[in-house]
Image (tube, rainbow, N blue to C red; front, side, top):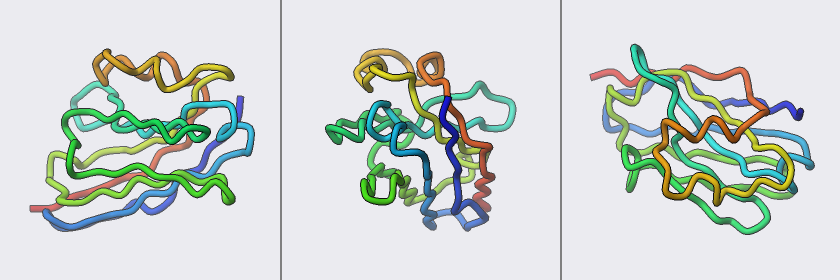
Length: 133
């Protein structure tokens, strides 16, 4: 099980932007689907966006479509989550995670974001994102 580390969280006013970074091992980025998850107050953990480092295939939750972008820097084994047009309802804990070996991001296709987590086994510690009105 590989370890991932998030950075870039903080506080921002509604309409603003934040850039989260997720750094992991070469193994995680070579062999796994890497994703961002969040847990909003009083709600279930849900997937946000995922990326398959080897192919750049991505998927996203409807709640962030058109506002968030996932990308990677292969040389640095880092995945980014660019969050724009942030809303107060985006506030919560954000986590990056990676699937087990040989499991591609295709497993998230066609299922609700609330069910993505079952395919991920390596998790970062999480970072707080707070969006004020």
